[in-house]
Amino acid sequence: MKKLTIAAALACAIAAAAPARAEITVCTWGTITGPDALVNGMTYGTRDYLEYLNQTQGGIAGNKLKVLMLDGRYKLDEELKIYRRCADQEQAVVINGWSTGASKALRDQIQEDGIPFISESFASEVLDPQKYPYTFIAGPTYEQQIIIALRDLAARGGKKVVLMYSDNEYGRGPVNVVRQSGVIEKLGLEVADLVEYRYDAQDVTAQMLRIKGKNPDLVYVQGSTPQLLVALRDAAKVGLPAKLFMGNLYNISPAIPEQLGAAADGFRAVQTYAFYGDDIPAMKEIEDYAKKNEVEKKDIYFIKGWLKGKVIAAAIGNAIKKNGGQVPADLKAFRKSVRDEMEALKDFDDGGITPPFTYADHQGSVQARIAEIKNGKYTPLGAWINAR
Image 1: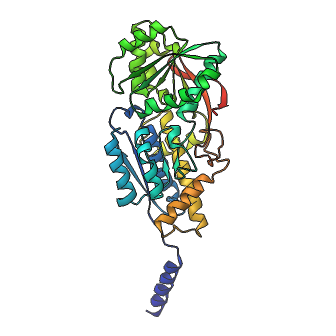
Image 2: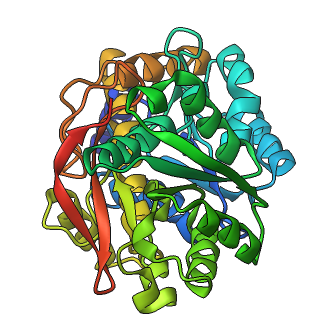
């Protein structure tokens, strides 16, 4: 009896000496259902990487991750409600949001709340480490991606460009910034036309006839995969080839060649991450995860999500390490520490998804290259270049 009492006392002493473990909440939302669902792999990818850590490492420093994946449905009011839920009720340490419209609407609130926020938007209007120190993106801005296309056009001897864009913040904002920058004129190019279309348009034949009349050397589409599908389909109707068109990262989707077939060949887009299935260390992790779990989206957007998961986990892990191996008890202090550690990431190795990057600029990697659809598959043209 005495031995049992001593053993019980010893067990209690060991338990008391062990550091308390916490549950760390990360909140991510995307268009799980709705008009932009074709690119929602980046929401699944972030969730899956953090769940991968739960399954293989018990979370981060022994602390389980509670990962919430919510559906914003590409509706501004819904996204704003989700943000407040994540910030207040769920007490998330990091939030990963979605649209350009929501990121712009929330940019001041995020700083006031002091929550590290990674936006799926690449709009330069949400990127300012001094003014918006809690907001991060994950790659070259939309404006930098447009400029890559314009530089390529100038290098090939082209002169006339049509800028085609959706009637929302995602479409108008980046085009306006580039036009006002003077870079088009500096490159010796001319804007032959500006063509705005409804974000949910199912027919843009009239716009394509108008573009055909301008005889441009390039049509740059500031839109997402669903809009690009409509644009290329209707361009083919009026005799405009896919090779005349170029878009941003959100136009690198297997859905485009799968749905359009040969009509998509020649279309080009800006690539900022490795492709799903590339021979890189991060893909080995994904394959390991897939042995026991269903991977919902097998595309470049899932790869982007996996990258964001790695960034979030690294920042949280470093914040815990700096707090003596324990999760800070004060949520506000924990959030600030995670923000600081995110910004402090230097030469960060994301497993080959991008070249190693430093996050002091809140962008991460700004390396990009142009990929073209050839025989139904995206094929990189040339090496990685600096998007700045």
